[in-house]
Image (cartoon, rainbow, N blue to C red; front, side):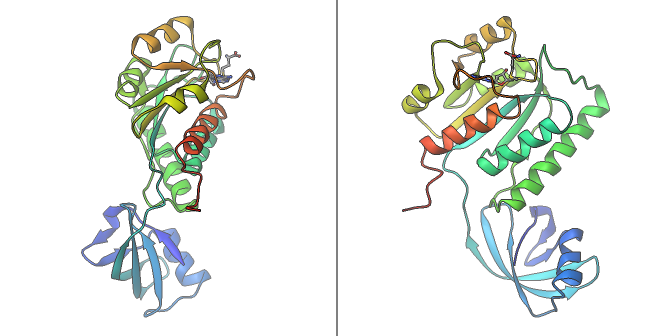
Length: 247
Ligand code: SAM
């Protein structure tokens, strides 16, 4: 049985499972001290552990051995996504994590329907980070996918431009396709900038190009705001061999 903990739950060789996992171990699996579990520590290691203390809501295990465990992609993809409404953004996070993105940065832009003030930003970011952590566990990532603070469009462009391959998904792009850009891409750090439900303005597209991002089309169909980044992440994973299983 494999569990996932963030590094703050590890103290020396002692691991404390999260409450939900502790309940699963004690009440559902009815495991006892002495039995062994595998714990992914979110830092690229998998630990073989022996259960030491099994309580209803608290389980402690002792690390017996640590093996490098990485099913992380060789390409580090950061998705910069315009905030969208309700569960669309939840879906975007979850599917980008499953398909291989490593970091997600929400941003606000001109056509964002969602408007957040002050404390709401922090609460939203924490919620998004929880969704990314749960998705990381579910798909057995060896590192927890993180979610950055909600930033402005300009800040997102500045960060995205530092990648080896910075992609601006633009629904009105008529010249350059994603596949051509990916075939020519060098390096391992990718940035995907994708718009909210309302898309990008012409000015925002010009800002992105001025920032050095490649404006690309992902085909003649208009994808939903939660679909487009997933398609781009999948294309990057395919192109970089990260959908292979080491044939
Ligand atoms: N308001 C736009 C419209 O109706 O034409 C749709 C925006 S779309 C729902 C949200 C975002 O997905 C876009 O801003 C873009 O980043 C991305 N996107 C969707 N389809 C795309 C395509 N065919 N090529 C490139 N990007 C696309």
